[in-house]
Amino acid sequence: VVIPAGYVGVIYNAFGGIDFDTIMTPGWNLRVPVFQNVHKVYVERHTVSLLETGGNDIEVSAPTKEGLVVEMDVTVLFKMKPERAPRVLQELSAYYLAGTIIPEVRSISREVTGDMSVTELYGPGREKMEERILEGLKPLFERDGFIIEDVLIRKLDLPQTIVTAIEQKQATEESVLEKQFEVDLA
Figure 1 (tube, rainbow, N blue to C red):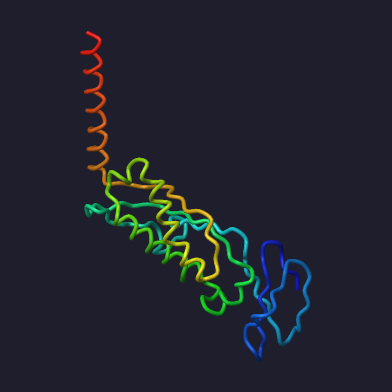
Figure 2 (cartoon, rainbow, N blue to C red):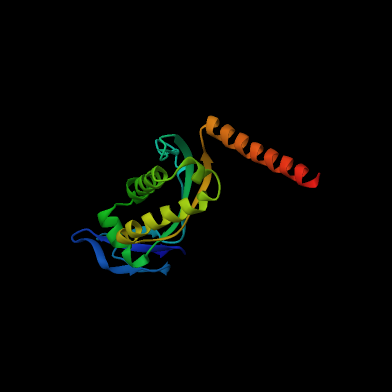
């Protein structure tokens, strides 16, 4: 069997189940045709964007500390530890993205959003939010055999009334500074 680059092969024996001791590396590998099936498992960087997964996993809608609901698209960059591929197939199945990764990302994202206020989310708090989500996901991913590389918040939609209020506040502050400058100049 040929294992392509970026994949490892996990052997499933007809009589013994998954072989946890043997991992096929990219290239040509031998197998016993009738008794062994090889599952190719992708171990390079995955990019999972909740907005692009379709189905019920479209966006994360989460309430902030004040109870206002924000909608966001969270993207996670991670890869699987090659030596953990047999365990991932055994414990999480081949559908680990939909069954484990996406629910964990959604849960931690909601938890972090619930601890932050709207004003924190609107400006530089987005980076803080990404860091907190990354910190929350790291132990979960390591437990399951993954290495998390980065968390990106690609889209963050606040309620329109809040956006308008924040913009009006900033415009008012600018106006006050402008008037203060005119007074100082006079």
